[in-house]
Length: 310
Ligand code: 13P
Image (cartoon, rainbow, N blue to C red):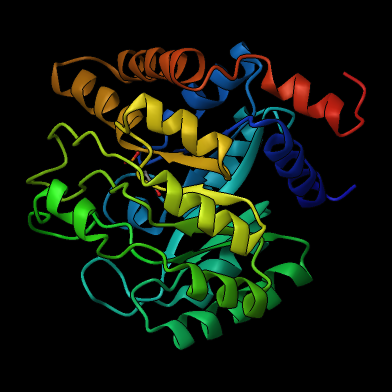
């Protein structure tokens, strides 16, 4: 079985029983082994992922380096490898050579890739996503796209959160989502239903994240019209009751960056070593796996659901 076929079947199995697959971002290379070890220790299935901005603005080095480190330290039974946000237009408004980044990931053996055309008009987002689906599916690799906008990566302050949530600015529109999925044949869709990304600019990246809410009624409509696994970005700091409801109503993958990045950075800022910072990540991972998502043992459970011997 191709590795990405396995991943697709794991996602179907997870969706059918309401197990979430978290996806952990790696902005600093030494975080990767700490994340991989925590997944093995708790027998929890998750994705390890890197976004373009973590290569350009943090210290994950390159798309290929993250894949090499994945092969060195991760057990593929408990961890898939995903390329997060490759924007067509980045958070600073600049055009990106997305084709080069996607090609690099396909070459490096990623199981799934994300193309983010959410800053484009709908027709252009559909066109570019179709192109990536064609490139990736040829190699047996799954594709995530984004429709609507999950804010937070841009410079400068966000509008007040309660106003943003009440106005539903940037929320994914169900009719557009139906058309998007039909025309692109994308595998997973990142939807905007109230979450925001953790800030990444040097002035704001240490701030505590707002406790986002989610519009679950909206999510139910999106699930009904798309029929594919939905992805929640901005996973750090969302209020627990909303997380539980989201997982019961179509969210299969949740992206988490800030909740593991900030402990790593704080440990180093306090004069700790890389090993101390990795220990801080392990501690954060334990809380996320056991307390937030309760997915201890999910790797074995999902593996047996897809008919593997454990
Ligand atoms: P957080 O920083 O809020 O966890 O968001 C991560 C994310 O969505 C990466 O794509």
